[in-house]
Image 1 (cartoon, rainbow, N blue to C red):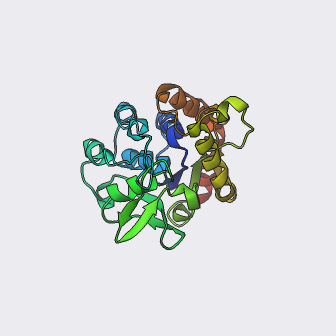
Image 2 (spheres, rainbow, N blue to C red; image 1 turned 90 degrees about the horizontal axis):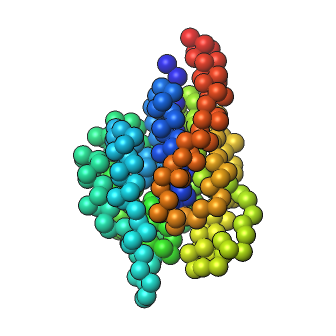
Length: 262
C-alpha cells in the first residue's frame, strides 16, 4: 500500500482552501497516511489528523476565525493573539497531544531564539499548532520550553522534509501563488502586511514545491489576503476546484506506484 503524505502550506485566511483540497481527496478515496503543516496548514492539518469529517472542519473554520482577535493600539508583540484557540481546539481535538491523533502529524514553528525552524511530532499539541499559526506582527508568539516560537512559514512554509521518510508519495498544497497585485490590494495596513508576509516566505517555498510528487497551487487565491477571514466558503471552493484539476494526475501516479510496489 502506497503511503501518501499531505503537506499544507501557510497562507493565513487562505488556509480554508486546504479544506477544499481535503474534501476532494476524501471524495476520491485517497487515504492520507501523514500530514505536515506550517501556519494555517498546521492548524487545518491538526483538525484533519484528529479524524474530523468535512462538515465538522467547516464548522471549525468558521468558529476559529482569527480576524476578530486583531486589535489596533499598542501591540504586545503582535496586534492580537491566538489564546482563544485554546478554548476552540478542544472542541475538535479530544486530547492535547500528537499521539492521540488518527494520522501522523508534523507541525513546523520558527524558533526566534535560535533563528531556525523546529519540527514537532510528539508531546503537547495545542501550543505548537497555535505558535505555528502566529503570523509575525499580527499575532503574539508563543513561549514553549522557555523559547519563543512563531509562524512556521517564516522559515519553512511548505514543510516537505518530515514526510520524505514517512511516505512514498507526497501531495503539496501551496497557498501562495506568485502573481502581481493591483494598487487596491495595497491600500490598507493589512494589505501591505499581508503582501510583505507573502513575499518574505516565497523564497523558502519554491524549493519544496519541487520535492512534492504533485503540488496543488490554487491560482485564484491571489486576490485574497491572509486576513480575508470572512470568505471561508468561497476560499474552500477554490481549493476544491483546484484539487479536482489535479485529481487525474494524482490517481494515475498512485496507480503506477502501486503497480511498481506490488
